Image (tube, rainbow, N blue to C red; front, top):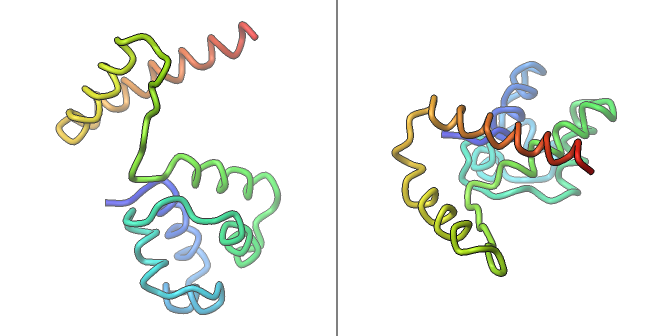
Length: 126
């Protein structure tokens, strides 16, 4: 398994034609760390690391912003704080936590679409 960030880094690395070991050496990290990032076994990397990745691949500012955004949504160990929210929010978060591994990909895509529409509607109201 991987994360959106791991997938993006692997794509950039393969597009450049470099190995994990070569990239890790250039960025000043271990190949094991880079492998763990690519395979979703590490949380969000530091801002410093993200800047080094952007520099290594000569990514322009817009692409770098996309990469940073992808990194923010790629932490494989998510914590949802529902303190102060109505009880149904806490129940929903806990149910999702308990059930997410068994959900089919199509269901996850549909739920993501519902969330995206709700966020877009809320943003338009602001």
